[in-house]
Length: 226
Length: 226
Image (cartoon, rainbow over all chains, first blue to last red; front, side, top):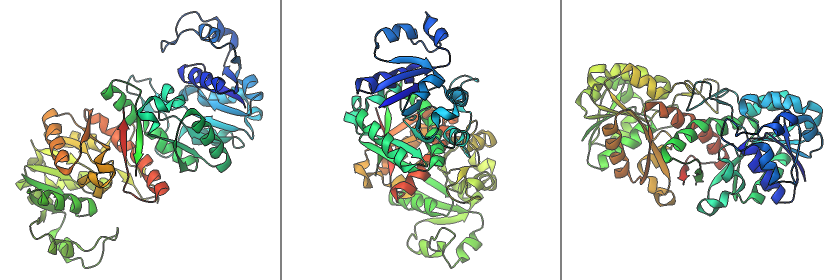
């Protein structure tokens, strides 16, 4: 499948590399290709420069948000949650319309330091904001509850015996995303319901960030025991 | 130990019965003993009348909030989250001061129907509100992430192989509550940190309520896999 991964951070890179490994044709989307390619030092999160990463992934394309989305059958939003709506605006309504749009972002507010609070929560969610702004996109919230390494390789922990969620209004889109997650190695994909259930998935983050601090590693997740 | 369980709903009753079974001297606290005792029909949640429940638990005392708290060494807030601050006001500062106050409530707003949103979240939590209002009480948030039956009998599910949290500013109080949870059968009690980490425990509820709807039972929980 032709997949656009919007966002060049650790999450975007990890998803792109895994999807390419699985045989998909992957384009990573960024705001400004020239700027992103010219950067020579690590980014604010300590990730190596994109150009260096691309040398190890010559099969993965790089394009602007609009070009990446235009060419894709499925689009993944792996941008910073605070900038996701702007990034998707740049990708363009017409390039998202009718497509499955997997939202893996979290609306974290790090402006007051760590741990972050949420920019939207309780009676709304980022996934709902995205679905409202792009009503013909088929938004599915997924994978935002786990660290990038676990997203694409759940079996690295407890043989994959833990849970992940999909939320969205379109059953076919959720089925397609569930298939994609299964190809990553996920075996317990729980369909939480319509897109409003993304509030639950996003509001788990304050627990996640505290567990991260307590456990001393982001490589953990939850199993829904029933 | 002499324990006051404030709240006569299903959570309060279940905790009280289990604590009495474990040998503690338990008093259930209510706003108005006469009114609570006189009710003959089921309450709004379908629980049988308190008088009927008390017939099966003759060893458990019933008293007003203040009297129950005054006599206790440890107090459990099992009142409805929307009314918890008022209930604790009625219990009285002087009867909570210096004592471990276990807060198992959730600040659920059911005024707009189901699923509920939260009355406080993101940059504050009910547990923090309680700690601020009663600064000399030793507040520990615990057990709010599971259904009443699991609270007191975690081994009924997967042999107890799942997780529960404690949050609070007082390490000794958390250690004491952890011991109490272990006496219920909990084996994975995770100390999330200070009282602000209760935001994470409370904001898990929107995920919990959606999982309840999806799974069709409230008897489930999460295991932190690491």
